[in-house]
Image (cartoon, rainbow, N blue to C red; front, side):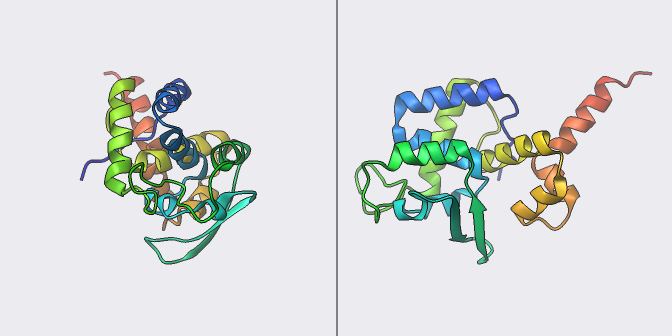
Amino acid sequence: MEYVQPIRSTEKIKEVKAILKRRSKRDYFLFVLGINTGLRVSDLLQLKVEDVKDRTHINIKEKKTGKQKKFKLNKSAIEAIKDYTETLDDDRYLFAGFKNKEKAISRVQAYRILNEVAKEAGLKEIGTHTMRKTFGYHFYQKTKDVALLQTIFNHSAPSVTLKYIGVNQDMMDAAMDDFAL
């Protein structure tokens, strides 16, 4: 398994959004919801319209942990949900396949979508976890609250969270930039 990175540049995030918006409303929405909630792709893919439409929070049972989780939606997520779901039936999967509307796309399909766009945007080390890590990285940069992010991600220690979102690597890189003998 490859180790993926967050998208650190807000300009690259905008570029990825623009590419996805041109390609598919569904795929654009997947990315926007992913980077604004920090949910695992396995949890995003199980959502139905009724789980998010006209809501302020997402209530899910996490696939990985089996734990119940309540997550507040931010303004960007709420706007994207309103725009995306306005014409969809409530019992439909948010990320239904184009051919089979009765099933959500697979993790593999989500990976392919993100990987194709990443190549077009000139990004490397991208995978489905990139959305979650991007959320975490930017949440941390804005709040500097590693304890809260650790709780959101359900990590065992702050060091795990900082490593996960790539902050440790940033700090090591910066330290080496300033180091010379």
